[in-house]
Image (cartoon, rainbow, N blue to C red; front, side, top):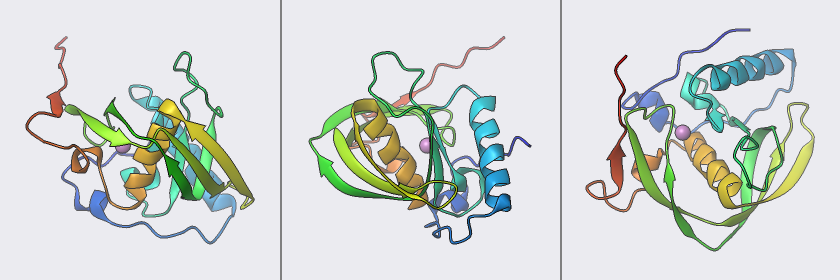
Length: 167
Ligand code: NI
């Protein structure tokens, strides 16, 4: 296992559209283990997408279970995910491992129906709401080369510089 380097804005690889996974093999499992280790290595991210470590394939990990009072499916590895249905919308604050210096207000659907494959290639369907739905939409955007900063209504009023604490 290994902790992978996280690409940061403005790395052009973050702007690429990722390709579907076609081979569900041991190499994919090894990569997913590395991606998970990378997600947990930093400031506990609720999600991470393969292109954030330079692998341009449609793979993401999602786990919002540490957040209190949030309905969720626990730890999910989503391969070739697709949103089938969107409902409602709400504005909410987002951050991203690839945009370490800012958070931003982004409008997302409040509930979604999502289809994906698991690491063995089996098809699964999920209904998500609230923060888990938001996190899924954020991570799926990475697979299409979009960052939350591309979604803020106004870069002038909806982006916030993170406080940096010097030790
Ligand atoms: Ni992100």
